[in-house]
Image 1 (tube, rainbow, N blue to C red):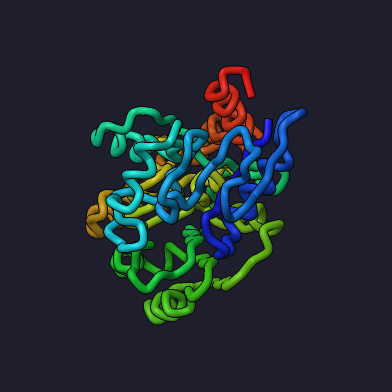
Image 2: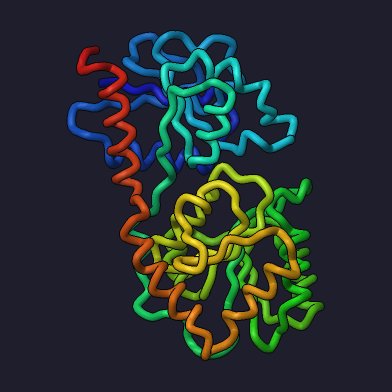
Length: 311
């Protein structure tokens, strides 16, 4: 079986490079992979990752929905993708929200295969939340259109207190947020860039991952956090409703800063059982969160099913 991952553009993507590396590492015996800008004529299947840049996917196409189809950004408007999704043999969704969106529009040839976590780098914590200020971790690049929820993050921060919380920020252009949090009196650690081999230690140093995004296909940091048994506090975007059970392995936020900050405040109370509940729930969630090996295996099972055992 030769599977051709098609990028449809010369634009480089670190995320895609990492995904393809996992596919190469965990592919089954006898499988071959090729990554190209344009479809290769001899491939058994073409797996498109930027299908909106194509005019015709052909009859051997699989596509992945990497973004939130509700996102109003012009680059990912639904109308740009819908014709390509309709002609694909199968659509891989990262989360059930994407799949529901497609099904509501008559596109039913789909399945959900989320991102996974790297079990070599991301190992489980040995203990739950320790005494002292709660460390809230934010792992995301800053975007000018504020899609990562910077406004909600700051509104929540204004309702918490530096005596009880501190921040760990990782991502490009996060200096503005770091300075704003510092002005509010918080202790802040900032890493503009961190080698991936250190991400296991990163998650171990935070008590909770905080995701404030308004639109997400993922984000990849949710399965990563759960892979280390780190509870997740997130808006109801992307992976969150599928992987995080509210008040069991994390908190699912409403987007209302008053209500959300009130719920997060509970975590600072050492006598509130919620802290221990979320720590234990995150350890259980780790067992149900797929590794990248499992994600690649599920893709190749899909490829085999689509090919019907023939080439």
